[in-house]
Structure formats: structure tokens, C-alpha cells
Amino acid sequence: MAAALHLFELLKKPPADLDRGLCLLYGSDRFLQQLALEAIIKVALGEQHDDVPLGRYDKAALWRDVADELNTVSLFGGDSQRVVIVDEADSFLSEYRDKLEKMLESPPAGLLVLLLSKCNGNSKIYKGLAAAEPGRLVHCGPPTGRGGKADSGKIGAWLQDRASQNYQLQLTRDGAAWLEELCQGHFGLMEQGLIKLSLVLDKQDSADGDQVQSIVGGWKSESIWNLIDTAAAGNSATALAQLDKLIQSGDTPFALLGQIAWSLRRFAQATYMFLDAEGSNQRLSIGNALIESGFKDWSVKENSQRLKQIQRQRGQQLYQWLRDADRALKSWASRSEPSRLVLEQLIVKLDGRLREPASQAG
Image (cartoon, rainbow, N blue to C red; front, side, top):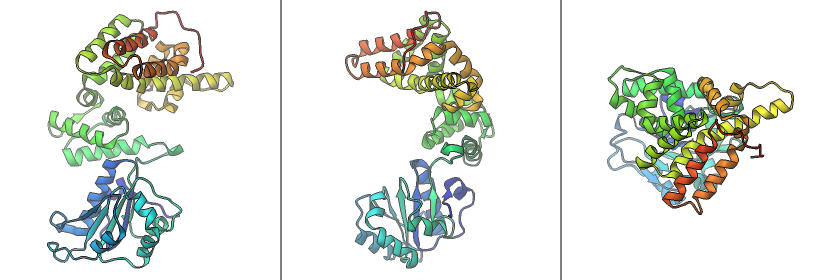
């Protein structure tokens, strides 16, 4: 079965032309969807793409309005075709599927672009557009590799190309990896990160992992990692002082718990995977357990050390501790002082000098 074109491919090699008819731009990332839309409009309207008004509708669009717009010549568009966009068009596609299917054989005078969160690969529309010229069907989510997971290699290469072409910035391989990690896979945040780097660094400067951590993540991001390291290493007093600095800077305990939990959940998952393999007499290294839990391969060494400091007994209880802290912050500890106490208790529990707690199911 023919496949959709991924956004990265569309941007790398835009189609020569997009005639009247239908385009579907689907995927989970809004920023990538907007990049695809801009590329399609430029192809469809050519040099006049900035001057020709577009027809725009939301999820409440009615077929009669969209159809009229598609077949109406623009007053200021010269001889350009009409481009009509329906945003959040999942319900529009479902309601008017029959009419859209007819467009495959009998296209209107203009180009209709539907922005969708997802698309059924077995549908007549999907198959028809996938078999048509490139650009009719564009996937606007992260590129995927084995097991359907996001392909960090492709994402990193794209970030490096975008940094060079759009911001005259040389982003190193580990810099791209750190940017993806800090932004947790959100492409809009990665773009903001590239903008930050371009404003701070000189043109053609090389942005490596350390610079990305410092400029994009800032001292708060670094402090979260340092706080976990410090507590797990057995220095909860210093970790509590770091927590105080973060709270004094304006971060709420609830927001800080989210940042702390982001890494601790992965450590908990890695712990259980390692113990499950051990109990089944299977070989699984800590490094592989970390990678399977969502850590990047380039961060395995330092995160392996963190997990060893946390120790397996604590690793088994991380899920429960995080659930308890979350429930507390949403109930009795919702006010400032009690909420701070909840985070302080969590940090002390991580202290590697304390006697290992009894193991519990998470």
C-alpha cells in the first residue's frame, strides 16, 4: 500500500506543483502541521502565496460554505487557484466523507486542505491520495522507527539541517539530542530552543550539548538533575537547599514535581524491567533497561550512575512515592507550606545514606 509523505521529506523536496483537489495534513504535532501547511500553500500559489487571501474554516465548517469558497475566484488573487483550509477537520472528514471521496475523481476549481489529528490508512481517501502525486497526504507527527517509537536519529538530523538553514547555526549531534530531550519531543519547543540559541550564539557558531543545556534548559533544568543527583548521592541537605532556590525563583511545588517525576518515572520503569529480567534468568544490562524506559543512548552512562545511586529498593518504590506526592498536592497539601513539605519528604526518601526501605509493589 502506498504511504503518506512525511513532513521532513516534503520540506526537503517540495512537489513541483499541486493542482486543484484535496490534501490531508495529519499528525499529532501542531507545529509540524503548520510547517506542512505553509509548504503546501507556497507550492499551490507560487510567488503570490503572500498576497492571495485564503479561505479558513474551523471544525464547525459546513460543506456548502467550503464548496462555495473552493469554486469562487479570489477578487485579489489574479489567476491563482483558490486555497481553502479546514482546521481540526476530523469531524468534517467524517461527516462529509462521501463528498470528499467524489473529489478524488472530480476535483473542484480550488485546493482544499484538511488539518487532521489522525487519518485512517485503510480508507478510500487515504489510499487515493497516497497513490497520487507527493504532497496530497502528509504525515505531520514525529518520524518513527522500530516498534513505532520516535526516530531520534531522523529528528536530530532534521534539527541540525533546520538550525543551519534557518538560523545559520551549527548544531552538533549531541546538541540536537539534548534539544530533543529537554523539549520532550515537542517540535514547537525545539523551534523556540533554536531561536534562543541563535540569539545568544554568533552566526556559524557550533552549539554543543553543554551550550544547549545551559541556554535552552537554563539553570532550572540543570538544577533538577543536580537535585536528584545530590539527594541520591546521600546529601539531602544540599538537595533541600537547591529545592529552596527553585521555589524562591517562582516555581510552584506542583510544577517542580512534574519536572522531577519526568525522570524518576523512567528510573522506576528501568528498575522493574531489570528486576523482571533478572527474575526470569534473562540478561538485561542497566543501560539497555534505561534505553527501553525512554532515556537516550547517549545519556546512558550518567543515568546508569544515577540509578545505581538510587538503588533498587528505592527504584521499586518510586512509582508509589510519586503517586503519593501527586495526590497530596491535589488535596491536603495544595497550599504553599504543606506542598513544599511534600517535595522535601520525597527528596529525603531519595537520600542514599538512609537505610534502604522495604520493597513494595509500585
